[in-house]
Image (tube, rainbow, N blue to C red):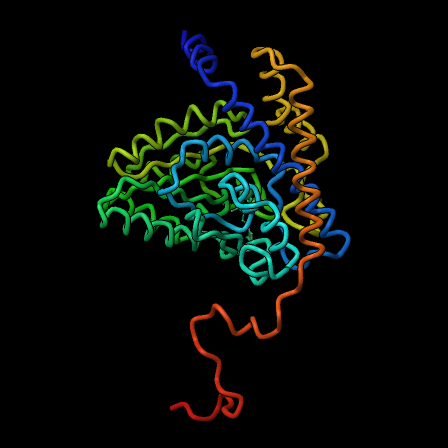
Amino acid sequence: MAAKTAKAKKESLELEMLLEWYRQMALIRVFETNAEKAYQEGNIAGYHHVYTGQEAVAVGTFAHLEAKDHIVTHYRDHGHALARGIDPKRAMAELWGKATGTSKGKGGSMHLASRELNFWGGYAIVAAHISLATGIALAEQYRGTDSVTLCIFGDGSTNNGYFHESLNLAAIWELPILFLCENNLYGMWTPAEEVSAVRDMTKKAAAYDIPAKQIDGMNVLNVYQEMQEAIAHIRSGKGPYFVEALTYRYRGHGAGDIEAYRTKEEVGQWREKDPIVQMSRYLTGERGVPEARLEELQAQVEAVVAEAVQFAAESPEPEVESLWQDIYAKPFPDSMSHSQGRS
Ligand SMILES: Cc1ncc(C[n+]2csc(CCOP(=O)(O)OP(=O)(O)O)c2C)c(N)n1
Ligand SMILES: [Mg+2]
């Protein structure tokens, strides 16, 4: 009965919207593949963490967000940025450290951001951004808006003090925030179960009396449907919600990970649940979409990413003087060293 209802609900979803989700997931996948290639070719430096395999979580969740909503995320942020609508050209240029990037080439892979899109960025310090997101939610509550703040983090974050303090405050103040834990089973090369006292992360939300659920994060239709209730709850002023999306990263933690901590078989098992393949089967099988339509979308995103790579390659490096721009403090005049003129 329950399965039947879920099927009927799925069938009522607009086909064009579903194709758009397919396109977004394919865009993220192709973007990440090309970003890794550019990294290996020495065009991208620094830390670099790709989202390959986790696409359904961002796409199914962001489909509920409005322009007035906020997003704060961690360093595995390329997919989140693209799902929010950041221009792939500017995102790719940021990865390449170019002046045309989202942060003028000074943020890099872990710090994609867009003030216009209320996408407040990728943060590198595990869990610290959860407190920033909680502050944004507090500000919106203070202003009396119905905007939702989405805070995304990994399983690793849930063992950190910022996580617990933030959930506690969000619960006390009934803040309009969605805590979204993307549980991909590992924090760097450590299995989540070795560092978390509980495997079911929703138990951590229960400790603060925050409604929570664990969902299949490999199926975009499922993510969308599960998120509906969570976001409606927050938007209607009922306070925070916690969702643990079970997902998997196909690639290593970051560039240079030799993946000694997991087997090829494990990766293969998760690849069988691939979110793009699942969606393609659903669209062609149950919704009668011709294969050619999906191939067209694939070709389209490949062209978009090729253009993004070319844009990044041809863009200028930031000027050296830009080191002193967009920072809080004015640099000391040349004549004044750090040890002079300060009391
Ligand atoms: C406070 C802090 N401790 C340690 C690190 C090093 N570090 C970077 S990523 C990471 C793993 C986090 O894993 P998880 O939250 O599960 O996110 P995932 O990479 O799996 O998406 C760690 C420990 C850090 N950046 N910040
Ligand atoms: Mg993880």
